[in-house]
Amino acid sequence: YKSSLIYRRSFPKRFLAQKVYENCRVADGEAKRSIDWDVGDTWLLPTVQAGFAGVRQEESLTLSIFNLLGDQDGDLWITSPYMNFSESYVRAMAHLPKEIRMEILTSSMEANGFFGSKGISGQIPIAYAMLQQRFWSRISKNGVHRTLREYYREGYEFHAKGLYWTPRKTNEPMLASLGSSNFGIRSLRRDLECQSILITKNESLRDKLREEWKGLVQH
Image (cartoon, rainbow, N blue to C red; front, side, top):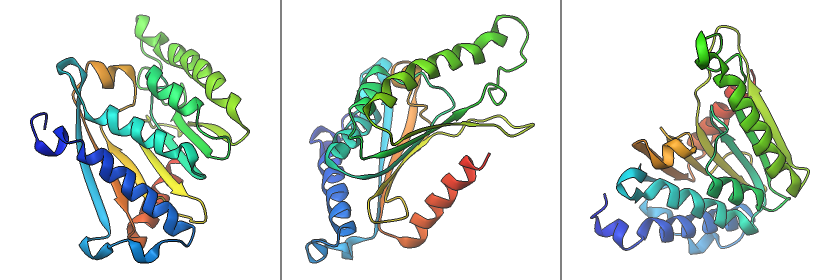
């Protein structure tokens, strides 16, 4: 990936910007004729994140998504089992317009894999709860359309991660970031992560993305 001409020419960023912009305009009932959907109705941009080796594709595209939403209106859903988001992500989320309805889903202490563990590891859920409180105090200042949820289901651990964007005047996501990343410091700097940016006009697929989110937040 690092030596690919596609990535060296920053093609994914331009492509992402174009498709997000076009989909948002279509959601507003504009520019329907300007989009050539004959080449397909769904695009998948695979990325690799290996910060330890200087490969930051996922981080770059995720920040691009946040930047593109700077003048948009709609619903942004983010889920991660750990609220240790990188400073760059927290700063970007904190500066999103207050009109964007942001919903964050994370693990409750009981659904954390270390809950009930013996020794020092048993304190990890408490540490994440403190990070969660710090994170929430920063992103909740920029408007009232912010919701934080904790997943709890007896006998289950929570490890879902993803990002979903639904433009205004629509009911289903048209963009999703899906893969192995927790959006945290470790994912960006120390681990090898594989993430894909999904952009779709396919109504069936968009409906499934919405149902996936609804299935997560019902607990």
